[in-house]
Length: 218
View 1: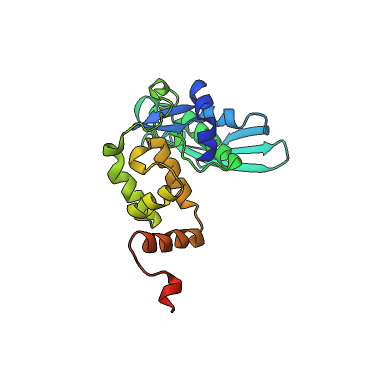
View 2: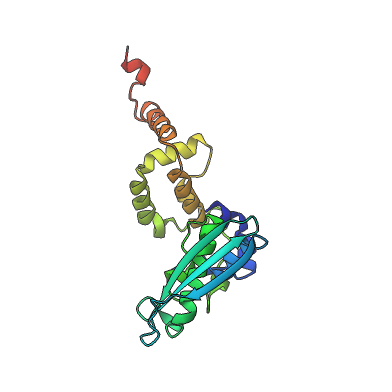
């Protein structure tokens, strides 16, 4: 997440991002851009389990970095897992997906790529629709329910998150743009349990009026 945020303007400039359902995803050219200067060799091969007659292709990609590390990725492409304009390009999509997964592993990038999601949209992408995030672009009404579901899955209440942001002197989620909220979710997901407990205790005392742990033990 941090890597994509850091390189967002450059990725947009080189068409390294693809819009899918209104969200930007890194694509194959974007991964190659981030990997520039780090790869010693990259090889791909079609695996024996492929069924050419049925158009079901499996590829393996192996990347060796300049410092000698090795990373592998596998990709599958067929008419059932490829949509849109790339539906008849299963061979190519399987190879690209294998390369993307090996590149993701090399870059320690957890974000799913455009080609893996579907569709070959990155091969015929609509990257021109991407706008660099602007401060406080208010799409909150559209994203509120999804954001709160994500918070619940991370074990946070919205009110607690607002309190944490207030302490840190940051904007509330409703004042952030979509990328800001995505980055916030990533940050919350990486908080240690100790830090989360400390914020929760402070919230209970300072906002809900609960006695502090020291007072409770008196």
